[in-house]
Length: 312
Length: 262
Image 1 (cartoon, rainbow over the protein chains, first blue to last red):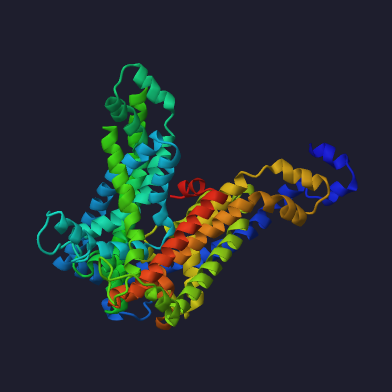
Image 2 (tube, rainbow over the protein chains, first blue to last red):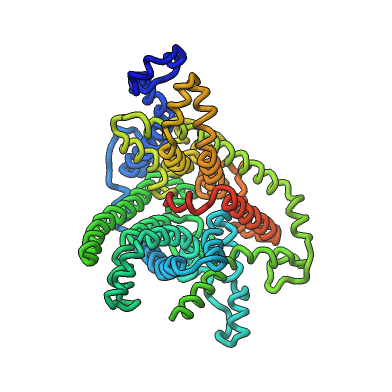
């Protein structure tokens, strides 16, 4: 093709032929990536590295500039791990994250599964209901939940009218309220991942199992579930990471009642002005999220292999 | 069994829609407090909302912020995605990971790091600083959308255009841009939505008199100035969100872009 092109009219010489493109490449392409890399390097890599450095600074620095090669100390971590208040907070965060993951999966998997069975208006309705929250500011939904859960709010009045409860409903500010709203917030992400994962299963595999006499439940347990495990694991990682680092929902729904890591990060940054401690708490949050992500990714690879084993 | 599943699904559908729809009946109250059931019907809180200058100002600021973040994101992403897709750059995977990593780490950690960094370089409480922060969290999405778009281009069309004597600029304008159109729109729109709806970044980074709309709403809820005005603006946001959703779904298709990104 190249040979033929060079034989053609002079117009072609002016045009960028593939050969010319190739020759011009290395520096040109580099220049195209440069602005993005500069942005990410200056405003992401440097700040995160500095945050790490700050978490190992002495608390006396509080809010002032910490020299990069100054004294490194474990003061902040000693304070965190020596204080039952902080340990409680880490445990709370882990419970909230785990609870949200379990609730989100229990609700989203059936939805994603049902989406593979249905067509037409029913499918549209379910998709609209599950995806709409992605397009509306989360504050709107949190405000809605707030009203629903309020003492003498909608849910309490309804339950009282049905005679199920007597007296004020202590739902708002509770642990359960926090998990409910976080689950609500993350169902759309989970449904998207799980639906994609369920749609990737070839119908042949399911039909094969059915032909060989396997019932609906057995087919689900031995074919569908193992094949969607990578999707389940991806959901777990995402929902866990998002819910334990959410500041907005705990701040508005439970306030100081359920202390979680992001609430502490915000208070130490804004009111208490102890930035080194806030940096250390952030590092702990980061380590938890990274640990879960890597741990589960390794597990996911094993499960995928096992899933393939069972199919063959 | 299928019936039980169906009932469960419908219950969830109602629960998913309820909190978003909740604001309308409550905002239509004629009383002065947030009560259920609403105390008579009136539009007075919607009128109060439109007269609330602070609220209107924050809406303007949020829109400008989201426009800047989304536009700059697309402008930065197009050349980057081209270079990653076409150029045989060393460390391509590393570059991709680096670009998408601001979305991988907890946002509260990222914003604290930025806050500390801004304090030292003098960007604290500035609009520029906020735009950069929003750019960091929207770029991974616009980059990935455009990357998919560029990898789906038919290169024979570009070669044909070059053979027929078109300059690189003309090929870009006449061939590449029209083919990337839906991807450009998707990248811009989703970045805009993410930026407009983000609370955490502006909560830490915006100056007191220069709040964005979500932060203003957060503060009114948090500090306790919860009047039905808040519910009126929430309903407006719900309607805008729903309309955006429908329009996007009818034009470029929502599911295709969303499922790839999480």
